[in-house]
Image 1 (tube, rainbow, N blue to C red):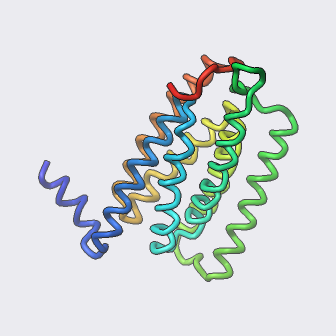
Image 2 (tube, rainbow, N blue to C red):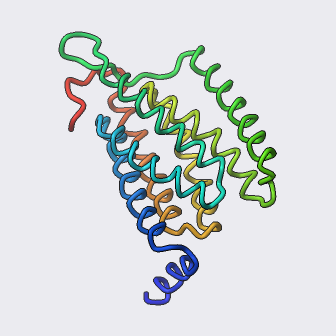
Length: 212
């Protein structure tokens, strides 16, 4: 067991202590955010805002521009999602979980393609296409952009995008030396699977509370 811990912390030999602390805090709040999303709990958004704010800074330091941009986008979409989720369909019920319609699927495709183009331009501008992780980062960024937009709109398909992006992110962050973040995405994958199943059970049901 000690060899495992030695290997984990060896990845942080040249990383400042404050960045390690920030990463752990960001991971904890990120985990809470996904857990609250699974439970259809409005606290998904304030916890997500804290986590994404931290990771914007960390990812800028590590040069993962795509994921830095997506965390900034998460921050903004958390504010939007907070507003959408608290809208009511009547005096006592909030908006329900629903499936995407044909218009939303088209917007999802447009958002995916548009994000790919945008992130590629950013990487080319800063001359950051110098490792395979940059190419993977552009794809995961597009996947997560769609997933976050669908979650903010309370669409069940958001979990499919989270699962796909999380599975790709586990080895990406492991390779970059962000061990805690890689482990976070592994947990995210598991929670996203259960989140999809939980939301499927509550499909088209309008909740009376968003704190449970």
